[in-house]
Structures are given as structure tokens and as C-alpha cells.
Image (cartoon, rainbow, N blue to C red; front, side, top):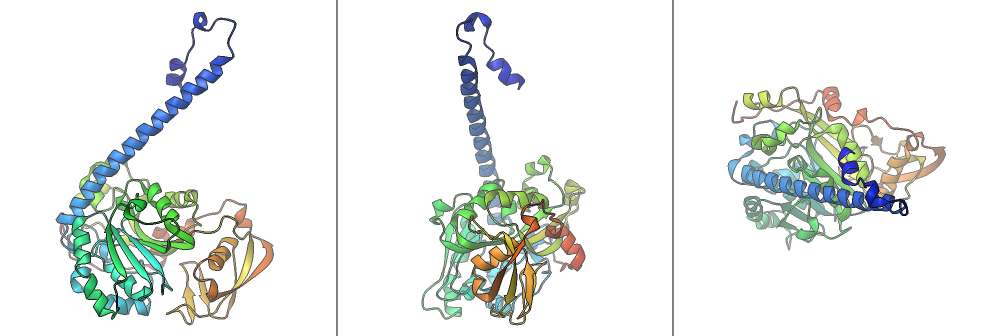
Length: 406
């Protein structure tokens, strides 16, 4: 305020007695201009930072890393805290070995019931997840892989025909496009055009996460889902981390403090995140251990929905019909919600809204209750959304990998 008050002080000789009334308006005018200048400067700073980070990540993943063994953490080989569906396992077995070799993800991005869906993979890399999704959406569905790295686009396109023939499709259902997560419209992704958006340990490589989440919200249909895994930090990552290109490339500099995720998601308009899986991430390289100090990392998989503006405000009684593929006896929606077939379960208002408005609406019988949901008016607690606590609870094990820097 010292700067503003000095900049907009009016001398008595200049203002006189007759016209004091204009001073507040002049001040507001100048203050608004001042704030606009700050906003522009902040935008330029973010743009410059994004550009620098983009170039570093392109180099790191495009030329420096040849295989997942070149990573300095076990992020790409964390054991899942829940098993893959049978159909996903079968699809993964059909993916070309060379594609799997250059897999840099940190979790699972294979949600249920994808037949006929249009799916976008943010940061598709070698295309491993895209080809698994290609099998699961079927020939009527479509998968779009988006990556900013030329080498990755070329590598994934190389195997598109192989998987089309492997899955016995009459025409390809997978396309790879070059682009940025922050500018999906530039890549031809239209508003409200997608059923599902997935991402596998890529958002942590982006400095402007708010824009990425907002873009995902924009391109999803109402009832659509953002289902993604990412690397999270046990505390706010120091700014000094962001000056290290290797920490950026490994995802550690850009990892979001897990609690900040909730406010970021809800500010964008999405539903409260649902934690699906969590595993600890181990830093193998002693030099990186020294740089990161007491900051711990975990892989977290969340599912988030774009709900209608006027969502349900009362609790509901829901009964799962057993119709989701691979989930005949039980549907494990997330780490906190498990629905047994033909067993009524009372759920909160937001979960009821998710089930009623998403692609799972036909898989549940939903009876609205007269009971208002107290969580709608009170301040909710989010401890159950911590990937660190879930990893501790499940004792999720880590598959040891051969890494450089051991």
C-alpha cells in the first residue's frame, strides 16, 4: 500500500478546495490500471516460466530418457494399490513391447466402463496408455493422445497401425496430436466434446496447473470425468526446486502439495476429488535425495467429475446393479466407496450427483432421501484424500527397478 499511496497522492495546491470529489475516482482509476499492469506482468512471468519448463521437459523426455529405467525415482514402476481390471490386463498384454519400454507414468489411468467413449490422454508419451484405452473404448470409441514432444508423437504414431491390426479394427480409433495441456483449443479439442480425460504423471511437469485443470473442465461433457495419476508432495515444494532441470524432469519440482489439489479442483468447478489409489515414491539417486531433503513424494490417482450447476443437495440410497464390466460382484469406485451388487448403500449428496449424472447412471438405482447432507453446509475434512495416508494404510509395496544413479 505504501507504493500505491505515494503514487496517487494529490498535493493540496493541485486539488484546491472546489473539487475534492474527483480524487476517489481518480484513485480508483489509477489503482485499476496498476492492478491490470500487475496482472499482465504476472501473466508474462507465467508464460516465460511455462516456456522454459516446456523446453526443459521436451529435452528431458524427448532425448535424455531412452527408457523408464533412466528415471531417478521408482515413479514409473510403483505397484498399484488395487488390481487392474481383467480387460485392462488383457489389453496391456497386447501393447507392443517397445511402447511399454518408454513408459514414464506413475499410476493407473484406466477407469471403468469406457466402451464407446471419447477419451483424451494428456501427455500421452509413447502411447502405452492410449493403446490400452484404444482396446477398451472399442471400435466405436475414440482416443486422442496429446503430447508436446516431437519424439514422443513420432514414436507413438509409429505403432498406431500395429495396434489397429492387433485389435482387428477396420479403421483406426486412435490419433496422436502435438500440443500443450494449457492450450487444448490450439490442438483442435472442442468444448464439451469428451467423455473422459486421463493423464499419467504429467501434470506435475506443468507449472500452470490451474490452466490445465480449467482446460480439462472446458473440454469435458457434463457428467464427464477427469481420471488421472500424478506425483504429490508431502508439503509445499520450495521455490529453489524449480531452478533445477532434473527435479523438474523427474516431476519433483512441480509436484503439488496434495492438500492444495482439493482447493484447485473445486475452484475450477469440478466435484470433490475421489482418491482411487496411492503409493509411496522412492528417490533412488543420492544427489536428488540431498536436494529434496525432507520432502516426501507419493503417487495419487484421483477421479473427478464435471457436474451440473444445480446438483443434488440431499443424501440418497443407491443400489449397484452389477453391470459395470469386470465388476459383476462389486464396484470399487474409489478407496472410500465400494458398492456390492444388489446391496443398498446410503451416500452423500455429491456422490449421488456423480452417480446420477455420469456414465454410471444406468448402473445404479438411485432413491433420493429427505435427509439433507450436512457436508453441503459444513467445512468438510479431506484426510481421506491423502495419497500418503492411503499408501500407509494399504502398505502399498514398491517394485524395485534398475535405475541410473543407484
